[in-house]
Length: 125
Image (cartoon, rainbow, N blue to C red; front, side, top):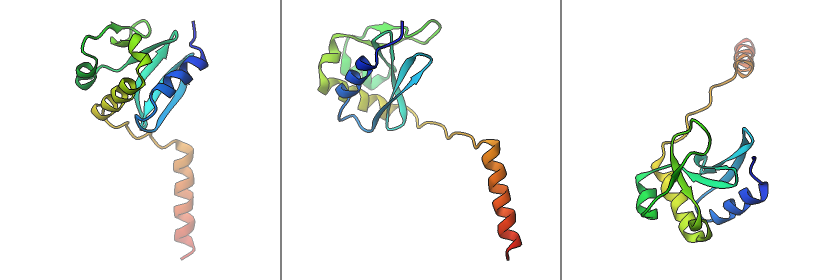
């Protein structure tokens, strides 16, 4: 069952104050980002947060779940979702502990355009 956009919007609103919060639809479900880092997934209208030491410290007792078959266990957020302050702090702490996203590779078409513009600049001198 795919997640409802209204639930994803609610989760995003609960994350207010965590940083630059965005989400993208992926494979019928949603990835949640804070400052361009994937910090959580929404699958089947449930919130799964990437496990971190800081997140575990904030939550205390954690419940883990699998967002989809074959996934690594993640923190399953249930009743805590109602606490906007806790969710924002959890997402900030999770994002701070995760590595920066890897730069995306330049596509072949963009490389060709760059080479052509370099050549044309060299000929105009």
